[in-house]
Image: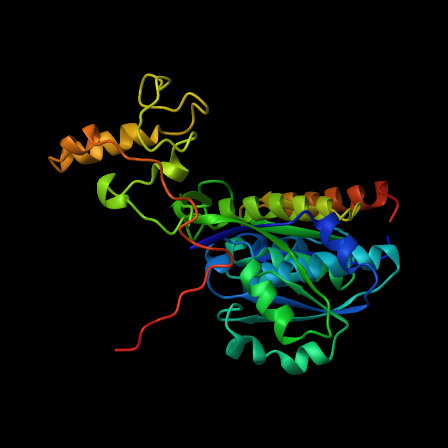
Length: 128
Length: 219
């Protein structure tokens, strides 16, 4: 893989999950760049596009589980924005640089690692 | 307000293909409200174009700026330094804004990035509907404040036609309300149903001579 993966992590779910993954010694690709956000709903289209412009091979948005968002609707907004980001990329014919959203709880380090592995696999399969 | 829609990105890319440094200029009024050409849309379009050109190996530099109203020369003048620094301008303003920009900076090509579609209002989040055809001969006083010229699919001045669907929908488009049913209900609420019997003679569609011009009278 040529670039890094930017993961926008909600401080209420994905960040604690990432910490836990580290403490448990779980392995995940070392090219992950974690950006802590107060809520997945804080992530806007331009943040995703700028991450890709700055060389990211893929972008992850990690938020709370459905119905458990600390800010009530942030994760559902984030999901819509991720969907729209993919439309914008498709429109601009940018392929093989996935943008994906995963929902997880703070005590789900394995799900965090799974999300990182999933997007890494997608990028690798696209030949980047 | 004026409603616009962003052009397909391929069309925009074709227009700016010969240039390597452009200004992406937004407008902070109507097109901001209809999500077509405000500060946010400027940033997104700029990023999309840079990504697309980067993928082709034909880099693009964009400057980005949004003025309060791109249809006012004084406000567009603020962009002079930026315009001088680029080869072309991509404007996300309505047609009026694009032309103001083009008139002020005649030596630079100015390309529209949106299609200006109509004068309308937001019906709900993300949906705008046409309300006014800017005909220059308003008769909303006699139709309960609902314009049949643009809101009736047939533009009937003496409606409704015989094709109104059950539930007051239009025969042309079942999703749309029949303007004349709306007018009837509005006039009924106001106790002015007698207006429905009034014959409206053919309208003068040339009330405004193109190009339109309005000169304010100073008090």
